[in-house]
Length: 136
Image (cartoon, rainbow, N blue to C red; front, side):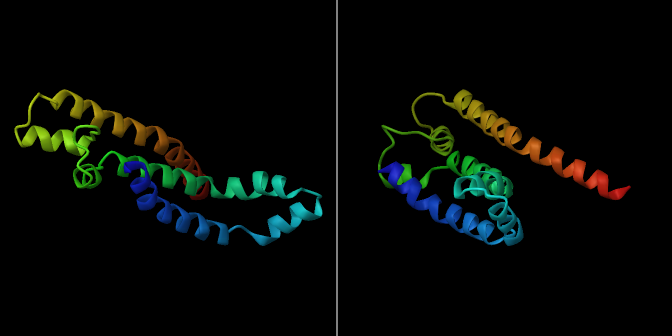
């Protein structure tokens, strides 16, 4: 049930972002690929997907950060015994729950920051390179 809730909660946002991104794909580029004899798959692979890569990274970052702060569905579905999240571990520690989970909560926080950094660093380098080239 938690997986169904997660898909129901996050898929509409991703679909709206991707739909908006598909609206910005240049028609001239797709037309040029068609004239060059590219199949539908080749147009998708070599024209549309490279255009959507920044949006894919954005959605991945948002979903990564959102998935680490899951609290409501775990408490709402009464799944405390079967599922945990960073928010639940912190809540349990602050409420004086059994066991000390401060180590695992801290480790999960560091892993979240590292995951966001791994996804964000290439985008920042590309943006810096583009900006550096325009300032000259």
